[in-house]
Image 1 (cartoon, rainbow, N blue to C red):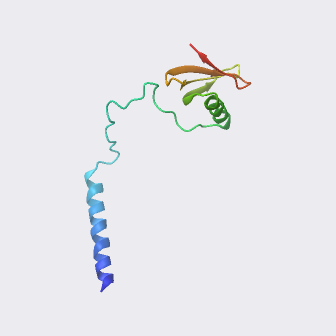
Image 2: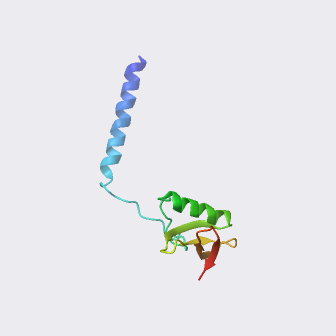
Length: 104
């Protein structure tokens, strides 16, 4: 008695899911909500390398949050943006010794 009822429920669920999928165009992206943009810029992807992860942690241990856009200069210094203790966006530099400084 329960098996036919369960089978009908599964078929109905599959039908509803197929109809919902058919209504949304392939590759459609929902519109972004307005007013939620971060003034510090777009969020970065997860840290791609171990070296960048170490630098990010060093900046966070120095009191900065939202560390983004880390790039390594030819002299080994890392540059990026972050938020300081006052939650203001600032440019930062991290030298090869791990010292974090705000730059202009």
